Amino acid sequence: MKLTLRHEKLHIEGIRRKLRILHLSDIHFSPHHSYEQNLLRGEQIADLAASQPKDVIVMTGDLVSRSADARSLLAARILLTHLRHMAPVICSMGNHETDLSWNMLYAYRTYLAAAGVTLLDNTACEVCGVTFCGLTLPRSVYRNANGSYFRLTPITAELVTSLLGECPKPCILLAHHPGGFPAYAAWGAPLVLSGHVHGGIVRLPMLGGILSPERCFFPPYSKGIYHHGSSVMEVSAGIGKFRLNDPAEMIQIELF
Image (cartoon, rainbow, N blue to C red; front, side, top):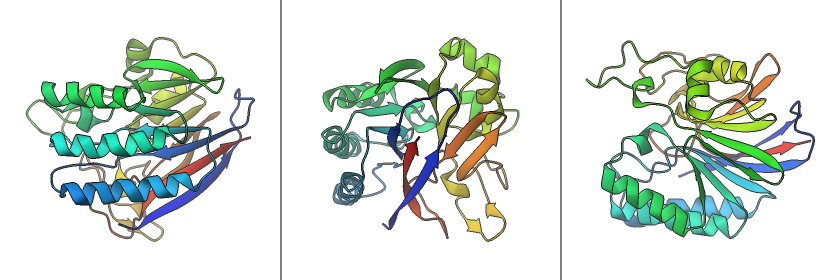
């Protein structure tokens, strides 16, 4: 796996302190790779993370795939333990975590707690004097009960408020699905960190990302920095899954 590093320097309205954030997303530890391959992927991530200055590490969902087994979770726990020795680690939920079986979800939560990681499941915490909110969207935002991608639940500011309450200003919102950016901005988040789209899976010059997991061509938010009013969203192309002309990445964000 070729893992790249992207640097972003952002000035965010309302966040008055300097903060260095290491952003990871969509690692997708799964039994489709051997345990040894998962461990190697974790070692590559940990090595690159160790080389970067950071105050906090955030993971915006899909740390594991919905097909994860006990060994996939163990590989994830080993990585998180390494990362936690470097800086505080905050994880939010992705659609693959919400699709885990009850037993696997319980094990996932247990492993994160054992690694000393904070899981934000429609909850908030304060790290380095900044409030982080972790949004867990309903499954129907991603796929219907029959498995189709038609007539999905729209992401609205009202939906975000029903899940997280009123926006604590200022805050950094960890929201796996970037498609809700207008709603996140309307909710009041000055900075959103997201993933999910895997950079569009295939990226073409001038066109950007081609496909989203919801089978939407040319998703509007696939990778990079986006603006909506005074809100800013940074979307990671993620690390796992098949990709073409779309390298796996980790983002070092410096707020100034």
